Image 1 (tube, rainbow, N blue to C red):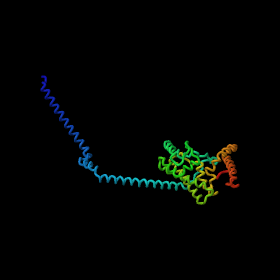
Image 2 (cartoon, rainbow, N blue to C red):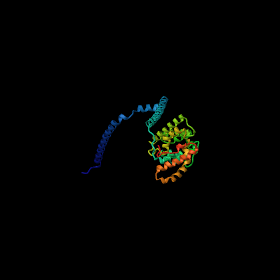
Image 3 (cartoon, rainbow, N blue to C red):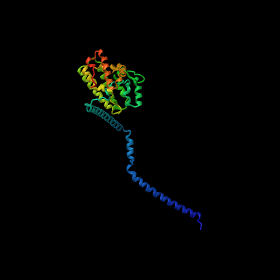
Image 4 (cartoon, one colour):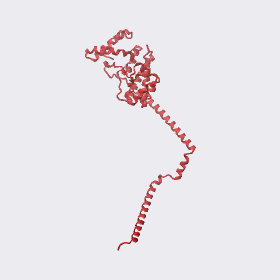
Length: 314
């Protein structure tokens, strides 16, 4: 017997009621589960209203500003303590290295090295190219103007080490510890350069020279922690290990300083070719040194007994 339209309508209504009941049951179960999970994390309306009212409270704003000021003071204290700790670590490292003396990295015949005409080389191994470009581009802001190519010679180096250029230059380096070491190195080089202008040195000045050259060596070793390619060059070895000994014996060292030996490079190159027939680098170095010492004797700085050198350097 076929269903009438009225019967179909009743069946559809019952199906709809059944679906609605099932939908309500599922909704209640879902709502109960969600409420159990999130009830503990949901703030009530009264707390939200209280927080909204407190945003405009002048006392609340003043209290926040006071807390911010306290935090800023605490940050400054921590930075000061960190700076003091850096200084203590630096002194500790220098004390640990106090008994270490720089060793000669080359044979005696190679201890006379070419002049380091590029004054910016001290920055190139430890900085990125962008920092180096900013450094070179800012040279015009200082009290001196160097060569556009970045090559600095005697007068430019002297001006570079003069106050306040070292402080301004090292501020461009991104690493604070590294810039502090380089700044101390530049200060020491400035002091040593000042001592080199004296025709005679007192015992106190010679002791000062010995201490500053020792500090220079230790700082250079510490700088090597930032760049493993740094090493003790022949000229740095002569400056830090032998210069103060020479000054104690003579009472001066200005004639053998960097400026004093610059004019000897051309003569040294000529003598190097002349004594190539010895087939021994050490013998060539000894003969060249004897010739140069004899050449310096008429200047009145060397006595006759200084001209003769033994079979090896001590």
